[in-house]
Image (cartoon, rainbow, N blue to C red; front, side, top):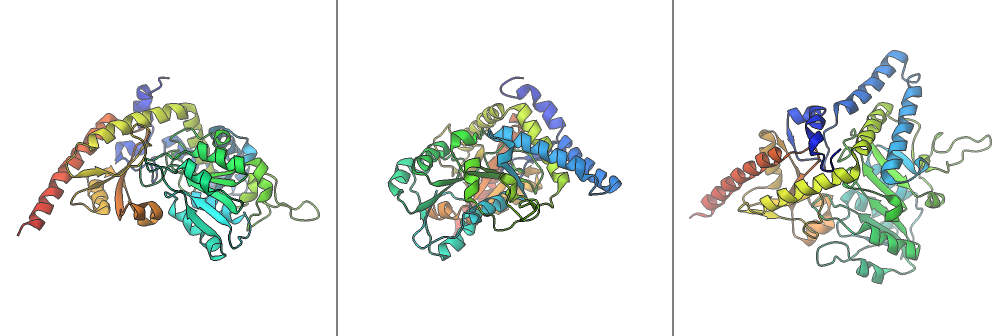
Length: 409
């Protein structure tokens, strides 16, 4: 197979029903699943309908473990370190709450780009007296590793990083931050929601204790599924707030929490969705994450350059040019981001729009009420990019005319 995936794109798109209906640039919100992923879901549902839901659980459980093996391969770890949850936010919240009680003076260090859902989860710790502190950014807008080093003391209990922020193309230095956390023995959580399925995610190299991400994004998995990695050596420090007969099975004398990551799972799950997830993970592994990453980088760099030539369009990405992710943030003169998204949707072009709540610390720091967001997948083509660019040029002209008429006496 070629490194660029170009030779396979026609086949991959033909195997993805949504590609025939829409031009999809909202992969950071949720991507388009393949027909094989849909078939895996419906096949398991049919088993449940014809054999009985509990009886069909035998095959469903096998597919769940198959998904666990593929997820472990994706993250470079053992399957015992993988749990499945209903969302990335649920995964992060369960791991955070399992850290135990917070005391006045405990410190949590976060990047300025931290996901709003994670910040919301930290609220109770702050109410208990913990201090939430923002790590300064470097000249490119990324989390500054030297600044982080200067903030470390004995009261720091957690370093939390959103690796690829939801509001643009920045790629934070997750591995370098992991080296700091390991050196000082501090718990390190990574939100990899926009990284999973887009770029390599080797948890050993990253040095994280916890990593999570929803599978519906670049992994093209079903909505309602997410991955949670917990470093085996860190597991004993976590006490989940909720347990059941799966996460804490009866050993004949007591209900004892599992020693593996399944202490964060529950006995009742959608085996149909996990069957679909198994297929999506398999497809990503067989294509090769490195190859996927190279294609996304090439397409997004080409698109960024062209967007920069559109009058009235301002790119809002942070990070080093040429070293950014497949998420492209912008604003367009004369257009509200959400109105722009709706207008393009009417033409069969999907993209995203983010308000302040998704990344509140960064959006407020940059005085951005909202951004429009293009998210590129390996499924996208040069022809789709041309169509998007032409649509944005037309809207830029329309927005300019509106602004001119509004400002006229």
